[in-house]
View: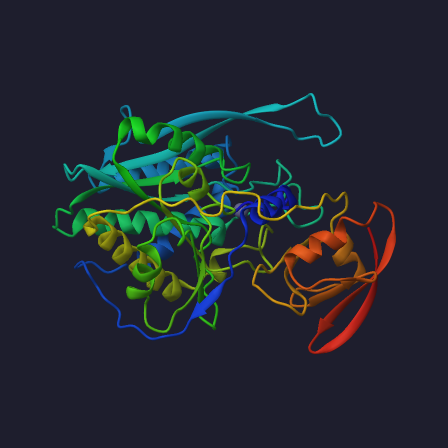
Length: 425
Ligand SMILES: [Zn+2]
């Protein structure tokens, strides 16, 4: 998931495209197991424990840790008898440049990344991509951490996104070992370069239609390891095909509440495929205090929860393979809202849910204005100065009126009580 440094840019994209209201569907459905296979919790645990171990040094794109992770993923694909996506091995190489010094626009550093991609060739006409990114922040060399002074600390990225990678490996096992020849081919894609801006998935999305012209769908999992006690699962992309709203509810596992978001654009790799006119789904268990911090570790993963999600994706991918047609729909592509320009940030992760009486704060980044003033995760932001914050749009609007260096009282609700804090922007 990439939100931190480029977070406000992303927020602008979100609002340009119109964030659709998140809503929870509470109705119960019977769990439908379409195929014969079940996800295995021990497999998920084994993959996550290795990928998020210190040995892999946080899997920074272009690092030795990334190469070790790529070797592991390749050998898992090989064990399953899958075929490479292109060339002789499972690796798809790509390159990009990043700017590491915000005060120096001219100097950029080249980075070489490796996607790891395998194909279950069912000799079908149509193909479905199931993907997740496996790269993470390494020792914070690319400055994407939300933790202050964390240079040199290993960011293990268990939830982000060893969890999604493990689910892709497990799905590859389930589809290739189930003795059923599905009506579609499945491509299992593990991307790198995601944390630097969806670089690996961009590369694959550019090539997929030449390799597999009839690529009909993409399912992305990014941070699926922290299903919380309230069992809320975010599912994005449901507006990218008219068949999706019903389908995602039909196969919804018992006890899970779905928070649906229509947009094909989001903070992860499905965006790259959506932008090539491929319908997508995006599964995500939500942000948390360990997001992009060295503390995103394997012992905090909800393994039974991830098993439920993996089975859900298996059923969805099976059902999608049996659909006769999956029409693609663009989700609110026009700029429906003017996005205010702002020069300051609070350093928080807003909650995107529709609300009228304040904006929830899902995360607070260490060392930034909000954290410095004592604002906490779970607070509800209601005012910046005299400017009223109702949801994410009015929040951006309020920020646009502030200049760097200014100080303003910021009002939040905490446990129902109003608190005013002085924030230096
Ligand atoms: Zn991330």
